[in-house]
Image 1 (tube, rainbow, N blue to C red):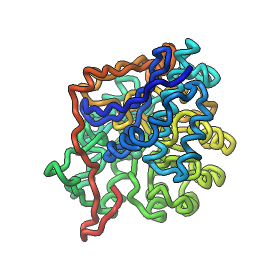
Image 2: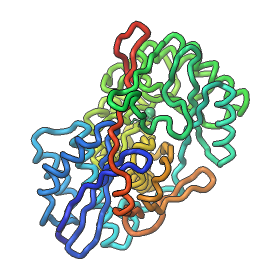
Image 3: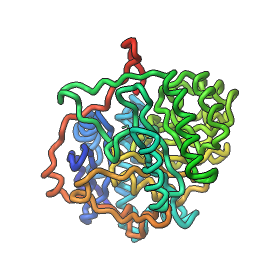
Amino acid sequence: MKITAADVIVTCPGRNYVTLKITTEDGLVGWGDATLNGRELAVASYLRDHVCPLLIGRNATRITDTWQYLYRGAYWRRGPVTMTAIAAVDVALWDILGKISGLPVYRLLGGAAREGVTVYGHANGSTIEELLTDVAHYRDQGYRAIRVQAAVPGLDSTYGIGGKSAGHTYEPADGEQPTENVWDTAAYLDFVPKMVAAVRDEFGPTVRLLHDVHHRLSPIEAGQLGKSLEPYRMFWIEDSTPAEDQSAFRTIRQHTTTPLAVGEVFNSVYDCNQLITERLIDYIRTSVSHTGGITHLRDVFALANVYGVRSGSHGAGDLSPVSFASALHLDMAIPNFGIQEYMGHLDPWREVFSVGYTMHDGLMHPGDAPGLGVELDEQAAARYPYQPQYLPVNRLTDGSMWDW
Ligand code: CS2
Ligand code: MG
């Protein structure tokens, strides 16, 4: 089954997405997500200029060999651009293998290890009262787990606040430069326990609550936060410190029993092998589209399984519907599934992407169509040209650069 074409489609239905289309000699098409928020064109070029020419003539069913060829053959290994590009190829080839075999990808991966995938939604508010209303909205929709974020009093902006668009992408203030946010750790550490206490008071002790710190604390501050939240039994606090400093989690672990999640910025097992083998975290958040695809993410989760670490994959709106579908297939089949983020996508995404995944009673299922169960309408995609957009940057009140 030879590959005869490999094309990159950049489109912006609500936000920018980069999608790889691989076509075989029999006319089968596989789709892979190659979106890297704020650096989309870097991955598009890596694919178009360096990878796609190497795919023509290769056997589409030799997924492992192609993964190894693109990883080892690049010489310059790892990194978000390289691994997002490899991920797109990998996922597209799994899609094709499913279409050849007539099976959904999760059945190629060993079949259903669960009836459905528990997802969590993003409740947020500019006040605690607004947040409580949004939590009720998600509870009433059947969500079994809910992420809670609220604006920190006194700050002009806080990560994750602003309805469906929060966390997806951000129009630069002047169209040319990233928006600049201002951060105050003391105000944040004072506020979050009050926010979570209010949610627990309103919704009781059993709803699973998650919170995203978004990389902004020092290890000891993260220990303080985790300890202050222990009475509220969080499902997890996420990205409490900059993720690349794996040893920081030793300090956090010494000070709190609040479960820790990290990994959405990781792109290979080498970013998290210490966190996993030393049990410094409870959930690994690596995603299919940024961690080398299904082939490599399956290896990450297999290592995590040995140490009792569960999956909690990233599923923000800047991971395309193709990426989210592939995440659900993997979530269905692995033994150590934890939870899956589901933020949804901004309109008019359904004009471009058709998907087979469904949600019922807080559980999602990828569907049983052969492959991933997703398709992309290229004519519709052409109606939404790329729009330069940046993620915000963050500074402390004294102007020092900080982590957004
Ligand atoms: C966030 C993301 O969903 C999350 O957990 O961390 O919204 C993140 O800010 C974006 O995916 C960055 O592109
Ligand atoms: Mg996050």
